[in-house]
Amino acid sequence: MRTSRGIPVRERQDGRQGVRATAGWTAGLLLLAALGAFDVAQHYRSAHLTNALPLTLLVLRCAPLLLVWKWPRAATAAACAAACGTGSALLTPVGPNEPWPWPVTSILVQSTALVLLGLRHPGPAPRRRRALAAGWTASQLPGALLVTLLPDRGGPADLLPFAVVSAAAALVGELAGARAEAARDLARERADSTAERARRVRLEERARLARELHDVVAHHLSVVVARADSAPYRVPSAAADQDVREELAAIAEEARSSLNEMRRVLRLLREDAPDPAEAARTPLPGLAQLPALVDGVRDTGADVRLEGPLPDHRRIAPTAQLAAFRIVQEALTNAIRHAPGTPVTVALTHRAGRLDLRVTNGRPQATAAVPAPGAPSPGHGLRGIKERAATCGGTAEAGPTPGGGFQVSATIPSREGADDQ
Image (tube, rainbow, N blue to C red; front, side):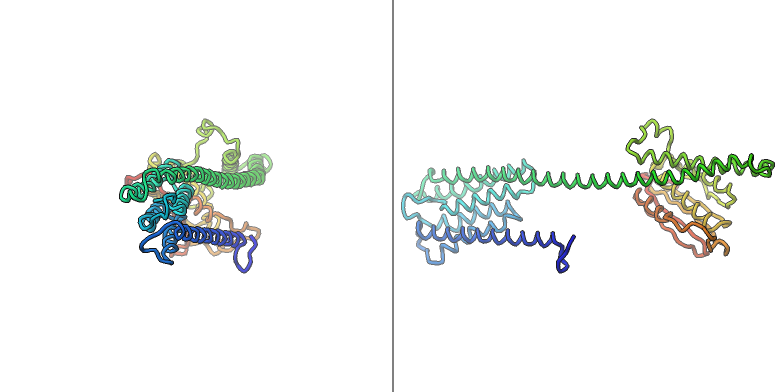
């Protein structure tokens, strides 16, 4: 957004509109006060009437309208009280044709207050209607009280004009409030629609990136599978050595598993995601699959130990199990990549409704500290670990240990309140 003197253009426009609205509202109130002062001076008399009294009374009558934008109900009540206490009880009409107990300007002030009450009321439609009905009823009570206490100045028929005008004002306030509420609902719907479109764009972009990732990685994994399967037939020494044949078969099987899992994740990212029955046939990995994961890493020659018994996976939510599995998987990948040959320990505990996990490797060897030529650059594994833990409402940390090793730890809510010692 373009700025001028450090102020955003939209903020400057909103500020100017607010200043213009305030200036217009203030000018209208001043005009109403001036007309009211002229009305009182010409058509009413009082034993206490002075040159300054009419204007003072009308200013006090109009003052509650300054509060109606922020406190509509209180301002309406204050307008009724001000109109009654600052004029109607003190003024006597100069002739029988003059309106009493409500001068014309008092009718305008209270009617305006009712309109603004309906426009500015923050509640839903039923509450707004009850507030308008209460405001209209309250505005009639002072007039009825004055006619009862001062029968020589007017009778019940004098209350009819204000009752009709204020009822019309209340109706206008209800219509204005309903329109304002509809405008707010429309604005919210537009904001929700904009947010939904932005979310769909992000999801489509993620799906596109997932497809690109699948096309790239699937090709290389397919090549790995093909070469591992065909190596015993292409290399005579590999065909003769049973250990080599088993190692190549394990490599091919691991590549096939990775390829199948990537394809399953891609299906979840697409719009035509699999139905629940298909998802049930291919369940997500959890704590029950951790021993197999550790065994697979151990088959590469790494020294990996799983400390203690695993927590009961039946008491842990599947999302927490999946997050824990992926975090351990990524931590083991980092350990065997950056500190090959060092011992790695994996520990999981479940207590007080949380799943704590820790993956620690020893001090890397000197030759492992410097990447080999052509080695891949550092990826986003640690960042992904923290993001995966955060999606479950947990936290993750990674950093060096006092002995020169490295540790990845995470705490994930398991949605269980009972302790599991």
